[in-house]
Image (cartoon, rainbow, N blue to C red):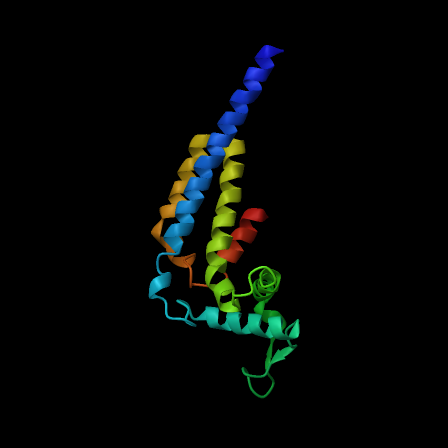
Length: 175
């Protein structure tokens, strides 16, 4: 019985160490993606589509849902908003509504600024845990470090980009 207790404590220490290492990589990935925030003017994004998703989120947070047609585009008929796949805007709007009772100073703009970083880091964490369970520590750490530092991944998942790329990446990982 004494041997099993030693083995159990060894594995829990090993898993705790791996978890701390992965959390460290995720923390560095989050920190890297937030480096450009001081240079980003208030109310601005670093991508064009982010303004559309922010506007859609504003309408959702004010009205509870989107209208059937956007009359600002494709005049006089208007654009069918179901074709824009508005799930990302719904998620950010309802995340904002969920956060504000606990943190009343958080704005919808701030939720949109940090949404790509949170989605990317969450997806990366899930992927690294899966890779650790399936292939071991070396593969999980290698993939985690590559994803954390790869310039093409950093650019599209940085704070302020606020496009759907990180959200789609998270959904792809979950699928």
